[in-house]
Image 1 (cartoon, rainbow, N blue to C red):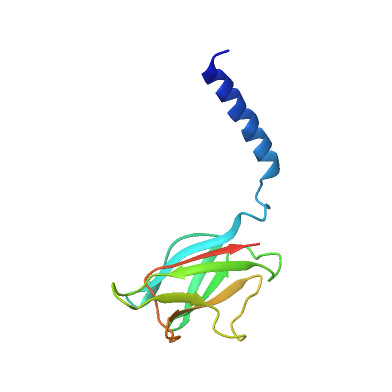
Image 2 (image 1 turned 135 degrees about the vertical axis):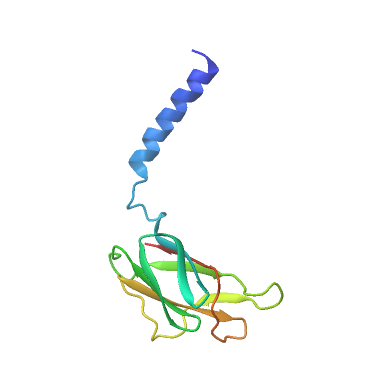
Length: 130
């Protein structure tokens, strides 16, 4: 058996083993993600997985609605936002207050400047894990 054939057989065995260990319920896989932003007076949802819509609640405040609800609200999320300028105006994705909702059907996030004022961003990337 040639080296190439042995490597192919090994890769096949590894693939079969991984397939039995990692499926759609694996906790290391994102349950939802979205690339969106506020451009020209409207939210643009550019690409997403398990996100039905993104609604702008107020300047810098967004509600991300899931296409399929999560099992509960015990998920974690991480997000980043692009600055609207090339110099000095950083954007952070945060939870504003306890009034912001985190439910199995949706998540409220806030985009703010480093000075903690609400601000929209042309590009926000959000990932949800459960």
